[in-house]
Length: 452
Image 1: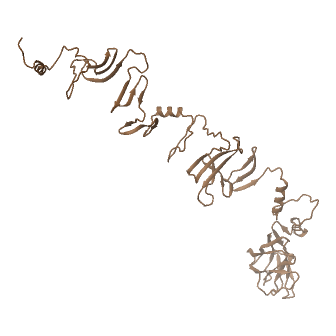
Image 2 (image 1 turned 90 degrees about the vertical axis):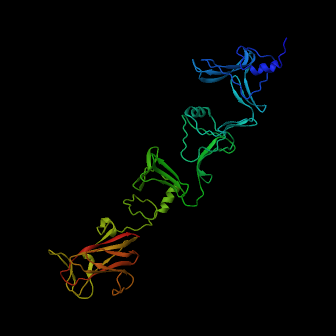
Image 3 (image 1 turned 45 degrees about the vertical axis):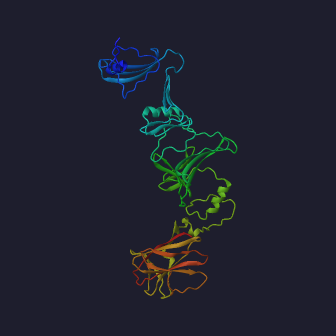
């Protein structure tokens, strides 16, 4: 036999393909190369690498082509196993010999303390078995509906939303329970603990039974009426509760069992349908009333002492002298002064009225003010505009008629008596009219009065 040098080395140098090889030795096979290629340039060639013991117990990597072509469609990682135990043929990924990820029959499992990231941002982060979901920017409608349906309690909720409008929709109701004695759960709306509205059911002491519900506002500002509670219906103001009390909007009323007790019309409130007063209320009302200016009838007074204004026959409306809030001044109420001896006369011709017969005289009327009343204005009606002087005079003393008058004016123009002259036990009004011609006629007048 002829010896041919280093046959193995020489042969290895010339071998570039092994088209018929179906098996390469046993044990460990080492291939030293920068790249390994496994190409199959035929339609539906689908080159495959399998690792395992048999065709039924192996891991397969397949480059699957598009149907009837050689274009890459999908890379398939497939395990085959005849074993019937759970998770046989599972995948397990190790980095630096540390288990990172397992793919089992029904789960993709990250090892403890591993994270799941997108673009370097953690989505799932685990620390010693405590997993946190984070950096989720949006939920699609299906996911949102699923989460909303799954949540039946928010026991650790401290904040809902941030700024803007947050809407809570429930098909039934929203329930907040605290089954603890003296628990008093509360719900607050506002900017902070010192600027908010709190709704709170208050339990009976040491129990869980409801005692009452309180609505409480908190306002750090010291300004009056901050924290006012306003009630609106269909966006229209109905009721305010503030520092000063309860304020109904104009044209609102109060009813009991559908019957109006307080009604309002453009700011004018009416108390009605009050069937009875208790003793305290009756006493309070009686003490508060010091005048009944609009009283028209006083029934029959059986007992007691009348301490109000005495009504004399002269000044009742039926007397004809008093008419409501005025006192009539008749022609017969006038007399002349002492400047001449001629009397005062009443002209009964076509130009009737009181007149002087001597131009040196003046006409004077004396009018008493009813008890409890005051004189507020004077009207004298005459044919001519003549000067009028009004004096407050006393029955029990002389008076200087040359002194300055309390009021002055003219006939046919109302004279305001300011300040008003209150009735006393001794005072009355003296009204002097300067007539300097016998053709000047006085028809009469009215004195306007009011309650003191």
